[in-house]
Image 1 (cartoon, chains in turn yellow, cyan):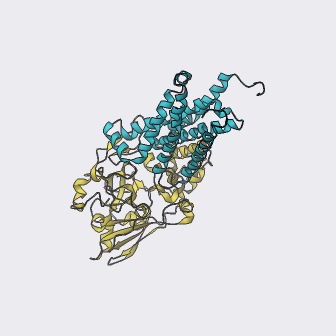
Image 2: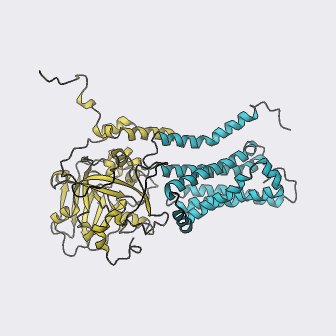
Image 3: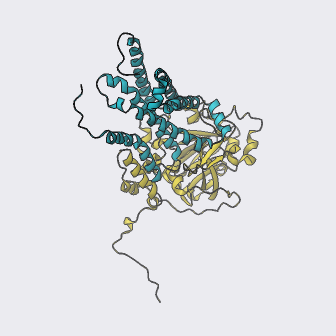
Length: 325
Length: 206
């Protein structure tokens, strides 16, 4: 008996809801309901769907030896609760506005103290490296955390391709700064001196745990999570995991980083997760593992180096972590 | 003499004001239950309860000055508004205890001893507590002259609440400036009137 395939000639392929919108439908609805309740303008769901690029499925090696016992944070929370001030300072702003960012074509310039400076494009990022999955804890300095299955490749793989020179001591990173696509950068109250900058010591960057992500949950990164390429340094506070990278330079001087420049008393260069070193305004002893609710706050104790002490504590032997926060 | 009162029965008006006072809490509860506050609702709720406690306190402090100019509405419901200030402050404190402290006395002591803005906030709540407990007519009769003296604690409470937000906010001090102007203005008005006390009879108690 012939297998019947259902087709509806009245539905064009252009009518199909983009997967990104489908997957984010609840947060999109909440975003517009939330806007209604504060009497702001209604963000148009159709506008978001028209401009959000569809996410690509990725082929990768699944995370075998780094699987965490912790439950993974639901995709909706990962992609609708973000700090990406280029698109606004509310946690829901990036999901609402990051679709304006063009992520293809995209160039990552790699230079500074390297033997062979060069460029990487989207195809190089998605197909030029062996992709693997890493399930990492992600700890924000604001004392909330998530568990995210990232897809990507080690930062060391990228750096080795460009051969850092002997004098190189640090790696600096820069985010895209495109005013017309990033409404948060046009606001006169925007507090960061764009572009967003971050940096690592070279030994931190070459550590096997330092990861460059091109995707999460099996697909390419949504814009609000730092598409098309972002850093994930799981033993440091989240602001070190710079998003939407356009430049990577090896340097011999410690690079200036955005949050350290903005509030040096609160945000340091190292920003290692440390329950014993409080933020000036709040304790770092505990974190809220999201999703967190009022009756079930999901308060968990913060672990030194976010639970990666065994692998990374050696990088900081002899260092006073209260001084070098 | 005021004109004959044709408005709704007192309990209807009182009920309406109660509903108005509860409105922010109801909106926040609705937002929470429909998932509009995201995966980390505690932060928004802390902000909301704190903000409304301070805003209603501004109305409480406005009651006497406005009454002197002929608008008695706020003054008539001042006790209710004061209790609303305390209620939102309690919600704020409960959220803090539940989500940030986890009802752990060690953590609470740490927060209270190391963070100035929490010391300020908690002190403000401690000052409001006796005011709430002595808000009844019976308490007022019992305390007599001392009731008015006790309830002047609302002034340091207001200043402490302001310090609480100033020491907490990291970038946008605009709102703090607005409250500073309001609180200063309302307190200056009282200082001025205290000085005139000797010369004229007091019609509207402080």
